[in-house]
Amino acid sequence: MGTKLLVYRKISVASVVLLITGCSAIQVNHDAREVEISVDKPTGICKRLGEAAGSQGNYITGKYTSNVNLIVGARNDLRNNAAKIGGNYVWVQDTNNSSTISSDGIINTTIVGMVYRCQ
Image (tube, rainbow, N blue to C red; front, side):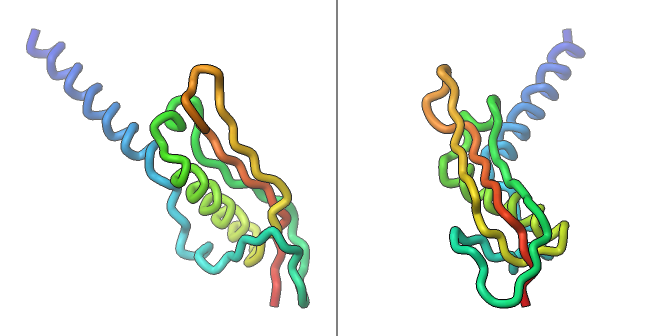
């Protein structure tokens, strides 16, 4: 009986940790902090590097994540992905907020954009 209780406690603690981490916004990496995100096409001397996407939330965690954290997390994920390919500017092409019939609101936010390296 004591072993089962210990297992249930471990599962409960793991569930709470997953829920808490699932509810917070994705953090922006140090090297991605200077990546600018805009709905405007970049001006000046910029080289197009490719496309990147950022996303926060899923069927499980999205239900418990605030809309603000879904948006901020998706933007931070986009910044992180843009920085990985050397970009410092993202021209947003599309934003999508997803929900399901069984959810009370948005469960996922995805932002797609064209990544540039601007001088």
